[in-house]
Image 1 (cartoon, each protein chain N blue to C red):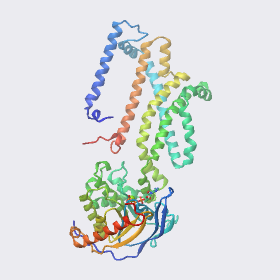
Image 2 (cartoon, rainbow over the protein chains, first blue to last red; image 1 turned 30 degrees about the vertical axis):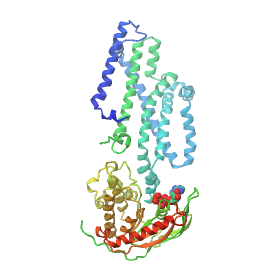
Image 3 (tube, rainbow over the protein chains, first blue to last red; image 1 turned 30 degrees about the horizontal axis):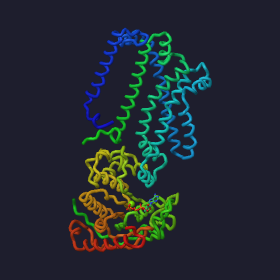
Image 4 (tube, rainbow over the protein chains, first blue to last red; image 1 turned 180 degrees about the horizontal axis):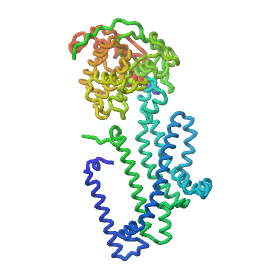
Amino acid sequence: MNDDQRALPIGVRIGVPVVLGVLVIALWEVLVWWLAVPKFVLPAPSLIFKSLTTDYPSLLLSLWITLRITLMAFFIALGLGVALAVLSAQSRLIEISIFPYAVILQVTPVVAIAPLILIWVGLEHVDRALLILATIVAFFPILSNTTLGLKSVDHNLRDLFQLYGATRWQRLRYLQLPAALPYLLGGMKISGGLALIGAVVAEFVAGSGNGAGLAWRIVESANRLNIPRMFAALLMLSVLGIFIFLLMAGLQNLLLRRWHESAMQRER
Amino acid sequence: MTAPMQTAPVAGRTLIEVRGVAKRYTGGTLALDGINLSIAEGEFLSLLGPSGCGKSTLLRLIAGLGQPSSGSIEWPRATYDVAGEPERGIGFVFQEPTLLPWGTVFDNVFLPLRLAGQRRRDAEGAVLDAIEKVGLAGFVKAYPRQLSGGMRMRVSIARALVKRPKVLLMDEPFAALDEITRMRLNDDLLELWAGRGWTVLFVTHSVYESVYLSSRIALMGARPGHIRELIGVGAPYPRDENFRISADYNEYCRITSAALRGAMAGKGGDL
Ligand SMILES: Nc1ncnc2c1ncn2[C@@H]1O[C@H](COP(=O)(O)OP(=O)(O)OP(=O)(O)O)[C@@H](O)[C@H]1O
Ligand SMILES: [Mg+2]
């Protein structure tokens, strides 16, 4: 982020994109009407809004299902990633044994392993498969960022802890974890978005479980050529994504603003 | 500021005995060779020498950070713990402030006590006392980023003091500061030293600083690092501005400078 952006008042930073958005939507509405675009190709914003209001009970339910998988995947990935990172920071041996497998999981496209996972958990437990797949996608940034963070402790501080006879636990608690926090939060920001992507992609590939998530709504709407509802579902997905991002950014700012370069407001 | 009674150190009993220490890093650099030095209780000893002559290496070895390749460093008066390590009771000030950026001034000064298992509430008095000693009473809740370089250095000094160490090891603590701040911290340090009966080991590049502060200067040469000369600075304490402009001071500086020039031009010198 450059300094010019920082210096802009908050009203401008929010107002300008909003005005732009409103203009684009208005233009979209006018053009669709003007060129008489069929609604199964590109529905007018007003139609999408109508679909959103009439279909909202089912859409909201789907939103909740997707959100639940996203959140669960995110928290499992968070716990697992941090735990493994802490573990591998304890010994080089553990680190070199864990890391290759984490990389393999990361580089193998989730779409490719979905059928396998589905068979393993059983076709009657699709939601478990979705959860596992979303977790796999969300897991790596947490692990690799936290590992990096735990390692990037200032050497003099490390010596200082040794001088004062700190125990392993004290070193972890008072030195390594705080030092890793900015890295972890960076990882969480990426991971939150990935958990959502994972939940959606997994649902596309593996189908839906007990209830249909937003991905399923999109497929279904496409099959029925109900494009306005498809757009409504898409809109919900982006809003959810934005919401997760903002939440993470807020958390990052809250925890780091006092001391870390990335979140400090520098007075000059 | 009340003028404390600074007394010239009585040549105390030996606190640290460095015997034939050599240090070779894994890269092959012979950083120190044949170091013999005994450090007496209560003295203010400076290690002075050209860059790269092994001052930091020696200081770290004395602190127990790393092992000498040969020779030994003994603490005849210390008790030894179960692991066979001497209980040195040292405070160490690094060349950089080396503070926890996520902690306030209080948190940073509290750290040594926290690591010793003390609770925040019990330690509060000692911590605030140390912070006040270095003149930062108004900045207890500030974060390192909100402080100037000199203030950060003082936090680092307060942290070294908080456990009331018997020995203070300082590695060019004031090197990055401006002359005025540096002189003020020099005076503060002397005052604290006199008041507490410490032993101070002080690494510096500066002839003037070493003469002003020390009761003894160990002059080091490079390649490999060795001690060339020990210079006693006999001038009485307390030392203040008057000492800085005295003929005595000038004379000591002249002698020390000449010796340092000798060290840098001498065998194996690189300048
Ligand atoms: N960790 C290390 N690994 C390998 N070599 C090192 C290491 N630390 C120091 N050295 C080498 O040991 C020698 C002495 O280094 P040292 O840092 O003790 O010098 P110094 O006297 O403190 O210098 P300065 O005044 O510039 O701080 C140098 O030649 C340096 O290259
Ligand atoms: Mg050094």
